[in-house]
Image 1 (cartoon, rainbow, N blue to C red):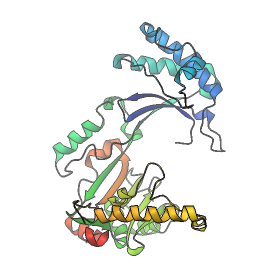
Image 2: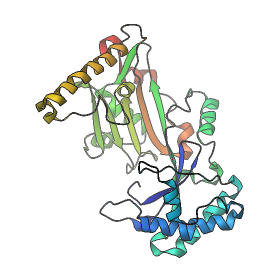
Image 3: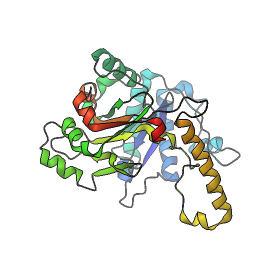
Length: 333
């Protein structure tokens, strides 16, 4: 879906982005950007007239043209800083309907446009005990607080559900030998032979090795076309210890190139970064005056919305014992 040209149209609070997708602009070469010319057409002849029709009281707040809005958003460093316009909830439906109509009429390439709601950064925001019905219901309601679920087709919406296994003062990770057992548990209707075949398909199944140890490995599996997957499209099993080295921007834990060792300056920088990494791992182990950092085994599945409250509720104790190993964090780090 991310290869289909689209434009971010609005936000709900901080983590919910509403995008409008333009499928007829899609090209096989993978270019997903909407041109400046098309952006100007969308704003000048579709979005601004829609706002003028539905929200005439905002006439003094809407830029006169795309060019004016772009100029107003430019910063001194050449970046963009956008202003916002709050649309009352009771007029959103009218704005959406009129905007789609105007796009349809404006240009053939704008036909069949549709909205996509992107909720990001919500991991951990709805932590709950999966074995308690009321906690699952409350978590579901919190997640979709700003979405009118009754007006959705739940089979067209996908949601990630996760289960985390942890032991205090330990790092818990997955055994490679458990992968097929986990998949059979998640897809009970699937034939064991088909599950085994899936784990050998390098295009749909990927190992995530831990510490270069053969027996310790998570995995990622694409199950979208799996006939007996009961709507589940993706599975991921991993260890949260990777959060220690994850960085939004390239930093000390970035991937290094061999050529960096051939230059004295970059070689010295690598040595300095190694010292920083060592200190991070030292603290994670609980050495010094810090408490230390645990790691958990996490299992995530992507399923249709209507199955979210009843999926991955728990794992049996016997399956957990076979699937994970807990290592003292001092030994691990």
